[in-house]
Image (cartoon, rainbow, N blue to C red; front, side):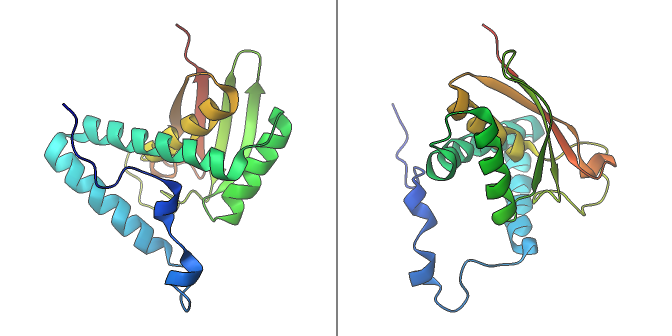
Amino acid sequence: MGHSRKYEFKWELLGDIEKGRPNLGNMTRLEVYRLMQYSLRDVLEQRYGDAEADAIFREAGRLSGREFFHHLLSGCQEMHGFIRKFQESLRELGIGILRVEEADEVKGSFTLTVAEDLDCSGLPELDYPVCTFDEGFIRGILEEMTGNPYDVREVDCWCTGDRTCRFVAKVKRP
């Protein structure tokens, strides 16, 4: 028996920004995004624990990555063009500066870095990586691009003392 859903995600939920915000437009400050993200995360952790909060953020990231791919990145047939378009989109939207450190299309493994990451750059050191949403986001994009299931984990983060976020993505083998 399913739950009723009021907010099943559709790209249209992002709205008509020009119509709805004729004076303020699509810009806001980073603090506002982080205020929403980290207060939501705190409530989820209090209610469900940190492991489940991570899982929820990863799954939300995956959903947004899949939709992001279909609305902003689709149409790329080969990996080089896809990566270039992915980099341009992240930079243009102020999400971060993407670089590909390693890519093995045959094995389906990638090491990606995101500098000036929207989620964590400038935060205090916490001894653990915080970009679980990004893990899911990258996973969703790679899965849609390749048609393969992926596992994506952040191995370096601003919050662990690094100055860029590093993600290792590998195809999940059955």
